Image (cartoon, rainbow, N blue to C red):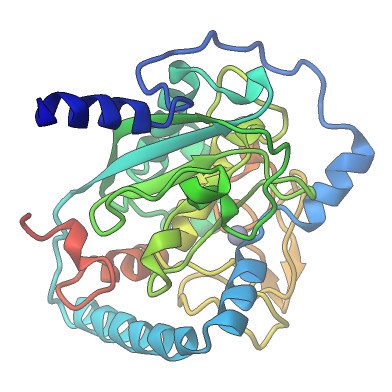
Length: 330
Ligand SMILES: [Zn+2]
């Protein structure tokens, strides 16, 4: 009898807005480009990751020292790779949990749109993207197969009364009307919700709080089919944010010519690039690698991670790395 009542309570306690087995109808792609005034806003704030990092350091000053420790481990791993150790790196498979937190029907993106994003991640992180041949000769030898595979683990759908979520991590908590993180020590969590403020996405670096670990992307910039908006309709916002989640910095180092992205084979730069630049773009006395996923160019104009960026990302999964639990036995 008690078991019966417990089952009833459990049933009533389930959040009714979660409909994990539904697959909404795919929306048509927005057939107009983002208006030029909105596009220029978005160009300036394409990615909210560094602002999120600054906010997190303000509320959690320990984060700086944790990230310093991770940087030392990363640099040691890079040195070991140079000395010939860890020459071959096994394929890593990362389960992906997608939280769709929607207000308007079109934000409740269909399964095909989600799968199209997983396909892009798998292409971009294995150097099998079809636009790889557009890399200028100067940089073509630097392109790397990161050898990371992504597998859709589950989709969680939550309907919400909120129209915009900003970059304050509220979407990552069920208690705030969002959706709680799932197994962040073993799974990549992606929240798809309207961020607002002209921001396409943001990520959290390794070493930060596990309850907010993962990336957030607005639905119209997620995947390649359904409710997507040109020129950010090739899934590269997510590729870029997963790069941050794996400890990559922006290609220009978020500073002047003296500020490096801590990657040896990416040229120094002092600014992001936008739109679709014609090669070459010269900054800091060298040609910018504008076609790198960690720049701010349009989706169709970014094509590569470098070997140096590969080392940084793979260091995260080393035995002493911040995401080692993804590759260790359960
Ligand atoms: Zn970024």
